Amino acid sequence: MNAVLVQIINVVVILLFVVFGAALLTWVERRLLGIWQDRYGPNRVGPFGSLQIVADMIKLLMKQDWVPPFADRLVFIVAPAIAMFVVVAAFAVIPMAPGVGVIDLNIGLLFFLAMTSLGVYAVMFGAYASDNKYALLGGLRAAAQMVSYEVFMGLSLMGVVMLAGSFNLREVVLAQADGWYIVPQFVGFLIFFMAGIAESHRTPFDLPEAEHELTAGFHTEYSGMKFAMFFLGEYVSVLMTAAMITVLFLGGWLGPAWLPPLAWFLLKTAALVLSMILIRGALPRPRYDQLMAFGWKLMLPLALINLLATGALTLM
Amino acid sequence: MLKKLLHVGYLIWDYIYSNLLTLWTVASHTFSKADTVEYPDQMPYLAPRFRGRIVLTRDPSGEERCVACNLCASACPTDCIALQKTEDETGRWSAEYFRINFSRCVFCGLCEEACPTYAIQLTQDFELAEYQRQNLVYEKHHLLIDGPGKHPDYSFYELSGKAVSGRAKGAGKHEAPPVDVKSLLP
Image (cartoon, rainbow over all chains, first blue to last red; front, side, top):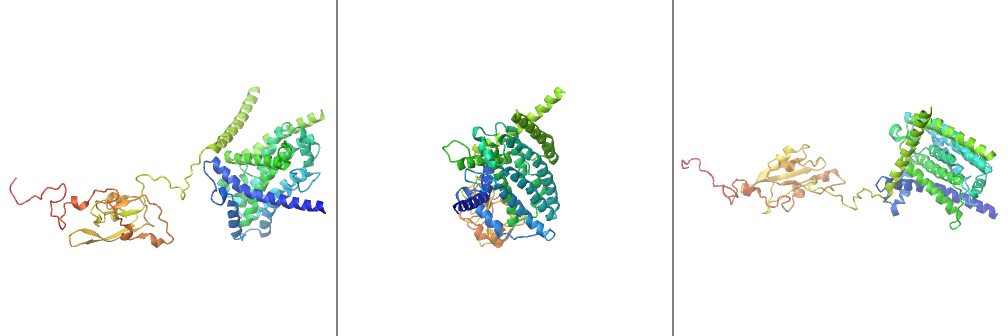
């Protein structure tokens, strides 16, 4: 009975943490981008503007829940739900600290990869159901980009799996007790970092929603809470990418004992989120063909070489 | 072959270096001050010749400077000034009504440049927001201020050479007595 209760608390707290963390992240990102662009960002609502998310939420909830008459109604409504669901579901396998985590899956890593692969459906459904040329172009780009970045995202993680000898994320963390995998798997770390940004389609890999060319890309026709779901899904996937990198390469909750394990996990995740925001603030978006060439001609061979080298070294 | 490989290596390094430099430059802005002027809390700097709300000024003796010559209205590119001349018993001209529609005004300052008596002047005030458009139409009593504005000592009738009551022709400042055109004396 007690174990069940603990598990329920775990689930609820992690779900709330993820959703509210992602909502807070929208404010954090706007403040940080403001600082890096020599302005303030939202600083009016509440202390340092931190209640901006409340204002945004109220605004988005008040909006008319509109479906364009030319859209495919069912798919149009389902798409943002998928976007939100897959990233939150992927969070279930992430071990945050000993005893903190929703589920201890023995194929956790595969589950994570499967969920991020499903994420492309949200974008494609949303784009296709919108019946809008910008959305369609965004959806096309999203499909091509996410499918091709998926390939070496998985490959870049296989090095970690080889070293740890397990798909269980908790065991991957424990295997890093005598050295984080960022050192032997630095190439894998870089590739996964870039693929993670591409999977959450954020700048510089935000071609599916490139504002300057495609209005808003795949979510052009979305407004109100349905738009908010896509938006929140993006931020949850930022958190998720950061958390995954922490677990796989930065030793998860492991760290000197003067901080509790959960604090180490959160600290590492926050640092990675910060660096992802910095990348968004600094780097320009490549052209579409450059993006594909970068993926297939540089990242994929690199991932394969990394895989080969790791395999050879593990066997020796 | 080796040369080509070296070149490709250099190109890759160049890309990486350029991106890292960009990241570093942006990150270094963490410590630079924001350029934002938080306007309602903090007044922005206004240039000395800033052109804001239009006023009608008075001369040092407290009389209205405006002589209702209509030059401002004809200079106005948006036709936002409307006025009607009237004349009092002393022979002074003034405006019977003087109306500026600030919802049309573009604050170009041409009226101020056209004014021969320094009556119409633009001020530093730009906070003209109203909830109703009609409230942006300012009548003469809204426009008139008590002081002389930018030219404190200037008084048109003292210098104009026009006879008004209490002062004959030639009695003003820097004025010679009128010439008797019928006299043959040198």
